[in-house]
Length: 615
Image (cartoon, rainbow, N blue to C red):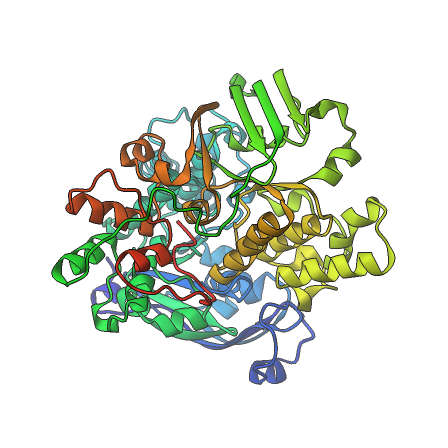
């Protein structure tokens, strides 16, 4: 550990930092006008940031989607102002160097970065070449590079991986770990992580968080780590937290202090830790609010509260998927294989599945379990190698792309796979226009969809100039505008902040309840599964290993552990309370509202950001 950490020093210092992606922006005017929308790339994204990053800590940065978190990180590695175009003002000092006057390549000797789109950082021809690339470019002596590769791969949990393999042939989780290893091999003093677990399953996310925590504790790891995330349970592992709002630092301090500040979290559009939310609704003082499940269970035991679990007949909390009709999707013995550098790999292996009209079904499982491959067969994006997939009793292969596209919408995990128009408005209009919708109806559909995903101020913006979370919302709007009978979502809440997740998923639930929309969602977001999906299908190694009521699935901790699924805090808390009371057969609460009700409180129906939406 360096002297700065031992003496409570500062790894980075920002003073009055302003930045707009519009190089012609008048930062003096933009920075002083609170009416400017920081979600718009036409205004200033950073609007007077003053921040000290303590040396020797893990610091988490949170805030609304599109509100400047990734932009802030880019000032720490000199991408801003030295590399990215835009208008900049202010002072940035990183590890004692003036980052505004330092080349990105020079600062890379001390600052390592894992980007949100981690696959963009991979280009080596082998695992070993990938990890060696950084040290080689830093002119590390050849005899030192081998030990650095060994150490970095071990730190990233890839010590046993065949180093001759091509990165492109690795799983998503292995790719993400390889990026970590390639950055760690350069031995940075400051490690910057932009949503490093956004595309990972619960186990993968947990492993990455454990890597980050172990790096922070290691004597030869990065001295300081700055992490951006939307996931509250990851954020709770940090030493200190920063909340961004309107392009400025709104709240900062020790993690437990920040994440029990209910008013600050809500105003910053950051999800409350579910147990904090529950006990706040029960009227507990801030000083008594628990942060972890264990703390919450202890508080209950030490108080006069008693736990009453939900009734076995309790519906999905969102009231969705409650009255299924006729079979819409029928999957019979479906199999599908990919050709890889290791030969054919079976992704879907003999799956049978029926989904009825009006159902909301979650498909969950570890990375590489076959979830997305199965989902892509539902609308003919992939044809099964064997077996049959039908929609309304007709083989999907018999539909042309326009027919099935009108009936079944598909939202990709990566929004860039379906965005191509010059403006958000044109992108959202593309689908309905191709289905013959025009005039006032087209305008109304486009306006409604854009407003639904909270992008009204960006209707004429270039989608590719937006953040990943904003591009995800564009993709969602483009499907909503076609008004399909069924929608298949691949990770629908990726990149969205807590308020946007609630708004979008509540919209989907309303369409399901009121219009009978059939919903299939592939997701790692167990909180959304708990609230919105009465039924959950679990995939493992290409097979369907479970198809159960969501509440019954979450009541089975052994099954959750076997299939590498993490129960959201409300579920974990209610299971713990039931176990302590000797009621192991009780079904769990699925949401904060159900926890509050089970402890004798009255859940608020109009809370704009409900706890427990995320993992």
